[in-house]
Length: 67
Image 1 (cartoon, rainbow, N blue to C red):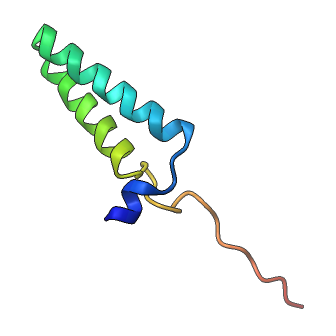
Image 2 (spheres, rainbow, N blue to C red):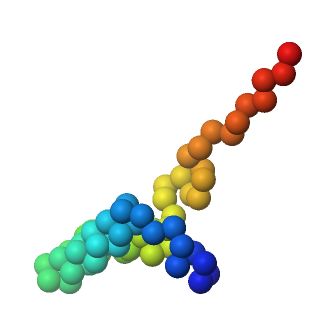
């Protein structure tokens, strides 16, 4: 758990956290439940560094070219 939180920081991870905090702040001020769901999702994906594909799920495996 500590490794997940302390490694792999990139621009997109920070961007998701900042956007999630902004959406949660907006949802509290405007009492908007949809914005709170979106903000919670963005904050979760940013803090735990997961994406829609999962960790390494969007990459294709290397193919072995054998004759």
